[in-house]
Length: 406
Image 1 (cartoon, one colour):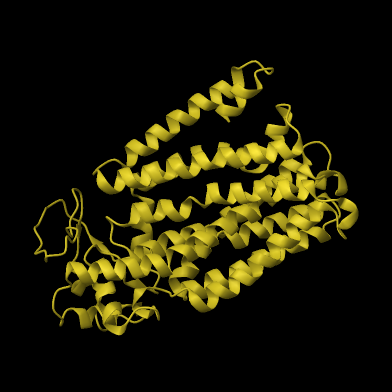
Image 2 (cartoon, rainbow, N blue to C red; image 1 turned 180 degrees about the horizontal axis):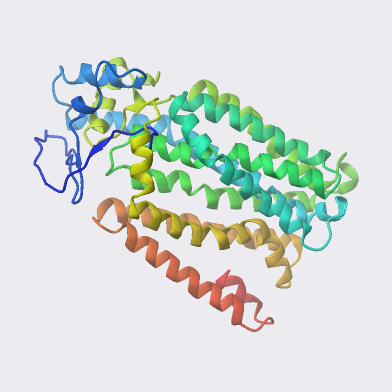
């Protein structure tokens, strides 16, 4: 598609590339060959972020392993924490409804029947509508500005949830929350490619995506703490306090992203000028790292007719449906197993730790063993199917068996 990446030349031939002492990835794959960077990024092409740095790098000596290690360490230190915190806040804010329901939000808003389910689900409608515009915006403008602004806007949506008085206003609020949060995951995925070589990306992506576990743990601990608070000492209902705290933190974090998250290695202020040049060069070897702000229709059609893209779309759809249910109803599900609010929050927290562990294992396996990405996906899905079957068919009085499956 026309988002930040280098265009690839269609071919089934394989070629060899000259590699330096650094273990660069080959510029070729089994099915496709990357066009030489010079043929794709030309001086007459406008709005190519990182082009100047790449041109500089072609006139310099090869990057040494020591230089590469120093650059990667610096990127890990300055980028990964920002990615992890951003994704964690995104997860916390979209699941705040789950914790608020435990403290009576549905009763305060007079939600009846399936209205709470609709309020939870409408988030994903807004998310779906904004996916492509958000990805385009990250390619067209500075990613830190897009993510910073959308972070502030969804933080406003979170706080304004306390002003919702009925089903209709809650639906509108949740729709726009999903709309503004849509930029986060695709944006961070694209930016991972800006900074990291293909061999480095899987582990880094699983690190910041482990936010689904960290966010769940933080949310559960927050809910447990609020449960122990004396309502008489609070000036607002407990469910409103959740939205106030999370919304305020998110708005403040949006300002941090706007000013401190670099759009890419070519303009990372925390890298020295010579490091910026080498940082662009090392990822450009794999066909990534130089961002074009032009929308290229031919790349859009290339993605639309790519069978691998559709297979991944179907796989993500299949995993996202049950994930959406668990995300928004985990607290309620655990309470229905016979646990009180405080214990349900702590048990949910314990379960989230397994998400972090499994993600780290998958990231390490795919980093150090070739051709294992789909194997990890398959194993993960098989485990989920078995766990779902156990939750569905174990006797209802078997609380611990169903909880472990959950």
